[in-house]
Image 1: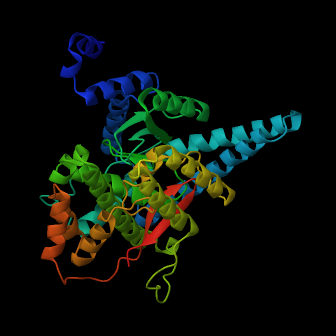
Image 2 (image 1 turned 30 degrees about the horizontal axis):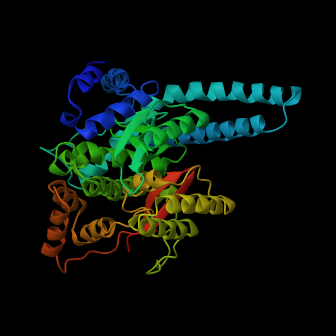
Image 3 (image 1 turned 90 degrees about the vertical axis):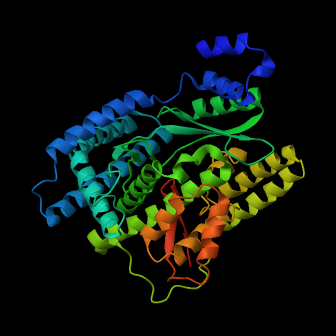
Length: 424
């Protein structure tokens, strides 16, 4: 209300256009916005209690491993049952289906209870394992991993991405309450698009770098490890120049996200190899120099390049019609994308390892990682950067230095599909 009065009382030319834009967005999402203060208070209390009780204390390494594997087996069964419920609700309704729904819900309720009982223990074990790997890589401050590795499994808030229509970039992002229906999401997107002449999209996220970070509930141990390590990198960068300048430009946002992806994927893979080697698929005898690109990656890059050309030529309506046409084509190929627009490319393009990105930052950061002799050298080098020019300078300084290729990394997981690329 105070901000509203200020905007009224000040002359129009004295108010920053960005402030006006942010206020208008805030007014439209007020009923749906995620309350970080309430969540943070509860999360901190829970983590302090977990640290005091240390549920993993006294367990052998074998017992810890068993607890983790049983938890993720439980999560897989929960995911199966939730899928069964979706199918039952999608089919014919009747007494038989109603009985089936009640049966599934009873089992699901019991499994959720068991999951809640084990969640704190598994979080503590995985936090410890990630910390040990980070320490073994030399990523310590005064002999300790800083900030401490902490995370919490959550049903994550949704994220509203807003991009201009004439340019692919994140103009604003807002976290929304979890559980908004598709109808609510689309109504909010349409309202914002019409009122502000922008492109918006509500997306799901795999992790959120609050403290402790939120990690989405998943049945994939590998995904959780990579996501938790990814969010730890954001927490680490919070105390460094690169993190301080996250919001300064799209380039710096992309640098932050790509660094977190590269380091998080590498650390997650190291934890898997050290503690769960039997779950790591055997490496091919010799990886191809240029792995075949997936159809999805190939198509998304093609679409993104075409859209960029159309927007640069000023054909906004044509680009939007083209994206919708291509979205329908992708759905026909089995890639279920609810909406393909400027905001979609702006969000996923922030990760320069993604096929949606046409930014050279991704390749340059991967090349810098190859030229750095260790993960420690790479992370500390990029953490000090405040511009894209710093990245280019670091590459020039390491001209000729090169270590073996890093292998394959996860770009992102969506609808239980993991998209990968190679750093070779």
